[in-house]
Image (tube, rainbow, N blue to C red; front, side):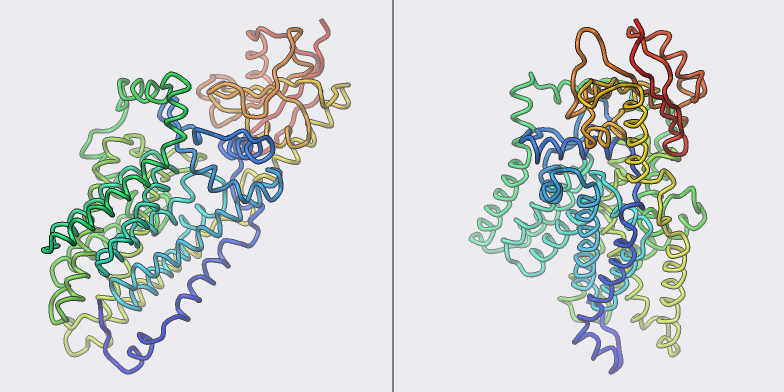
Length: 551
């Protein structure tokens, strides 16, 4: 643990609970205001709310989580179980209630990360790590909209904190806490499996250092119990596999058997880009918003790991120094292994697609980065290597870095209203569609065909608000009909709504707002009626409402 000299530092070190309160307050102030409009609203959010609505209103228990980008593979169902209490408060009719739970989880993650950094590097390390995460534009963004990776910051920090507490306290029970955090991380995103060897590696080291055979047996039993906890989280998946002919297994094998690296850059370049994104994302956001700053941030973390790896034990009590050095090596190697794993498992990270959520693949690594920054900067503030002027140079250097880090993030905060208008815009669009349908003589109990252009994008961004209004819809998704959908009669749907997304116009080859819709309808097996309304529901999303077919 890093020790700072001076009476004021000593008083703060004895009583820094107000630092904890302060970082939580900053995190709350940057996440909770305007929560209803700050987050994006698209197909993923609509899908999650439809599943939650069916779960809490109709008792349809999900066995799979949200669909992934890996073919027809899904994330874990535990994600929905964790959000269901918030959804149940309003019968699944308020996305704001669900977003609030996610925001509170993001705030809690700041607190857990503060504790982890403090336990490794002392009060200043905790304060820096907590502040960095509280103001992080990436962490704020992850706390303000509905998406399965957005719970990972908390679950991952709990897993890391539990593992570290088990290591330092030598109490095996903490490994069960680490197992719970790891299980949630793996459920919320399939690539969260990369956290398993990070936690397991420290458990293995804990077993190796125990000289007493009885202690080893106790620790091994705790490890087995932790493994059981992780396996229990996959019970819904097992039930799905046994009742669907192993659909997920077959989908995973199809994905692994395909050409996953077609069109991507070479492995060495991809490794560098993935490493840059993993490390810089929590500190400065997307690399495309500031590539030079991202490189500097990554270099800072790399320098921290290299420096504290070597000098953490110099001039300080052996126990605390050994613990800090162990932590730095553990988290540093974890980041390296994460980068290597994602280079192979997620080759798409070599490219950033604007308009789509990014960098969620490695959200579990965010707490590692914040902790290393906190420990490293605290080490700079306390280092004696600065010489006679060290009392001024060290803290001054830390202040400069912190001002730059905080300033960058506060000057790049997400807007109070998302560019797509968030759920309020989708709800207003659904109201307009419903009004057009009523004007065209379509009743709420008559099934409306909801289609997307291109077809590979789900219609659920607008299926959810329409179903919430009581309109019967047959909503298409790449995986089949959306939860809560109706099926049109043999005579066909009473009306049709086309959702055209301009982000994917190059894939379709035609422009939304007329040409793309006409081409889609000309090849459709079902005829449609007259155009009742066409409008831009959000920037780049054109909705076309067609009435009852005349023949």
